[in-house]
Image (cartoon, rainbow, N blue to C red; front, side, top):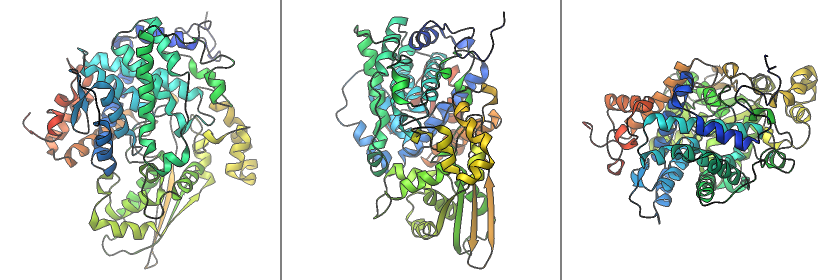
Length: 537
């Protein structure tokens, strides 16, 4: 008998009478490399490569040095060590937290349907794989299992104050699952670890996160919670198995509109396959704006063109996030989290340097020009771009984490009454679509931007980007190319020759073929000597 697809909790792998925690733990411990579809495995290697590239880029920024100092202060002495991409060998827990901080500091890592899972789901199993006899296939199974469980929880709680940028709590689950699957824990232990990991979700304070470096460590604290949850479960601590979907459980506590349908279809709907890879630092809408700026940069005469005014148009979420970041960038303050959300800073740097990667941020010879252009940039909400984002496979373009009542009313307020009335079906269907998982193969993101540059001699240049490079919905080969380029260019910026950088990046993209996981060896040498080092290794 065929089971209707509209029944949210029924498929070939789910048991509706089981709490999600038990279903998820059972599925994760039974998961094998061979039963994971090849497109999903390829997406996981792309996710890992992109995340390593993001971490390496951050290593070269001032915040990277601060992360290294913090993560290497007071670390315990253990014989088992893993590769911290800041350039040292450290115990696995510290390595995972440090690499997660590096990868997420510039908002330069990848996103799945359900959130940015890479900091925990990539770097926790990777760190613990280096301290065991795990091979590349073992690593990928743990990474994918962590992705699938963590992203489902993130998607189920996407609406409300614990969603979007405030979803750091879910990394406790990614850490517990990634390590537990990698190290072979049983059903009871892993189920208890997941239950414990989600039992006290926290939400960061916006002023602290955007106005200081606190945000860099928010995910690290959640990872630490997840690692401790697994240790506690191994020691015999138990958690409530119905903690996720119960009346007084996680979802109803963190979201005014929980989407429980996302808790279904483990093994048939693969969130890992919905990967988007960031080609430029910042949120997706910031990345779209920088890509549009890069297109314009190639149209005018560099060195002879004086920019008079720049107008950037994007979805409501971009304009709102930029306004929130702006108040923390005055008086010489440059907190990393606010910079990553600053549209004028990203677009100005792209127009001046012709680069979307962060390698040019601190060049003294460009700083004055960047500041002059930044002062001439204005950011605007374009309702048509918001509508296009709302029509994506999963509605985007509006900050759903600020929803407190009706989703339709929230969307109508963002669009404005007149436009909301003209597009009433889109407005009123948004809430329902947020609660309905799309088919994996149909998932795509449309978060665009339009940039208009007017020069002092009266010319105007315009470029529109429907979605930034590497976004879900483009061919997988294009997403792979973005991740490969990001990692390769980071290695080159660290002093690696182009041929060796290509070789090392390709090793990461084929990590599931590795007989033993050691990132320092995959990158060509011991990270304690720096990433570039011996070109002949």
